[in-house]
Image 1 (cartoon, helix red, strand yellow):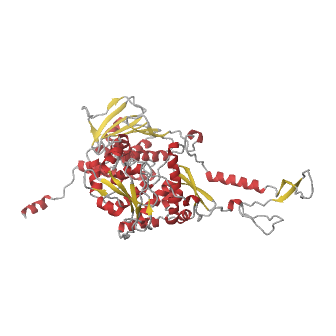
Image 2 (image 1 turned 180 degrees about the vertical axis):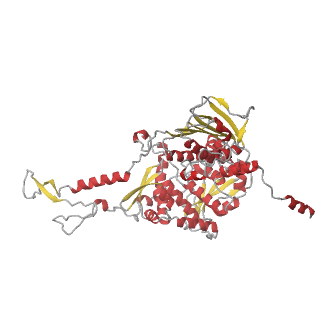
Image 3 (image 1 turned 90 degrees about the horizontal axis):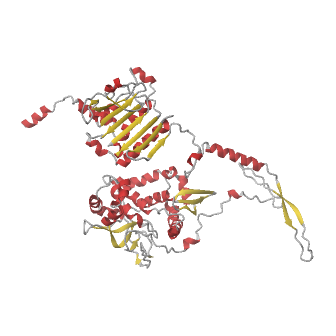
Length: 617
């Protein structure tokens, strides 16, 4: 009891140490490398710079260097540069009413100096040399090699260079909340791009330290209106004032068509009676009435011989019926599933409980083409009452776009336009639409997963797939892939244990992903979910699918977890991009075309809800 009283007495209110206060305040102002960049960029723009160069290392944590050619900083002002609330932008409160600069508080560099090793090189136009100094906790500090903390003369050009090193070195809790280095660098490029767009007559460049490749280059002289010749390598060139141009072209065509004569002259052969032996052929000119063209209110002028009939314009005639089946839909496909690296093991498919009785072929993932038939038994569907799944289904309904949903429900399939870009054509009414079928399939398979959740059929491997060997061979041993995209990936052992061992029961119950845990060090994949009958996804993406459900899914939140796995499953089911001209991929192209026309898009026509995100894409 006495110890408790002593503890209460000791918990008295005391003022925090100034260093602690400054670090807490710095953490509120600077929460990521991109925030530090933003503050320094604004200072450079306020200094009337015309060129700003940015160099980054390790996502801005190891090095963040911003160099400009602005007005520079006077040597006498350097001791106050990192003092909190020291600024050159205003002197009294009323100045805020007419301020025209980005910064005015004097907190940015002060905050940065408390959570990093900060150095500055600056030169004004009146200085004979540049001045370099170091800062720590808001004050001048001696260089790492030792010596005086006063600014020292160095060679340099007009302007200022801010070097931020070891950001958050003394705030480990902040380091743990940051994203991967590649994501932080992408955010830095995004921030720089935003300022480049909105800042006139200022050039920006951004690159990683140690490389010559610029990830962003915006010249100060770059016009707001870019000549198309400068970007002929681009896949698409857009016109300014596009609607106005189209309107004028349309008006000119209407005017030209409306000025046409109402009659045309044709040469025709005279009909000769069979009783007459006439050798010479006579030609006569025949005048036919030309329909009058009115673009805004289509109306046909009757031909004299057919006064009662009014034929619609060709452009207004719908010549296809979206309910009519195609011949290819009555022909069974003999295509094999895609070649993959999952081994020579064949597999069988076990449809859902809603499937009709019948037989399905066993399909080999490589060269084995002999069909093994297996009877399908009915399975009692599982009723899903999870609030998270209900919430995800509600999100889809709330995002529904009625017009686009009708388009997909009444479309006529035309064909694939580009296999490499995954573009296809659909007809609806009298319009032809070019669309990205990968995006459509992604949303469709996600909705199928939500609809059939916990009731999937199964694709069962005859020889289960070694998950560890597959991930190690195709992901973890690929140094270039790991360095470029997955620098923050967990260790293979951790991934295997936390996802495929600890979560195996959940994966099997909800997603029909059955895992053999007999040997926990080398778990084996026995089944995958089957979202659609007669369609087997490409197994080339199996390793990436298994890797991403372990690294891209939030396993701490139920709704995020279930939705995340369904999203990765939808990505796994999307047809792969193919080369348009490679003769070795001809069969793959034919298979993709057949699958889209006769399996996927007929199902899309029946059960797909088009959402607003497809409109945005």
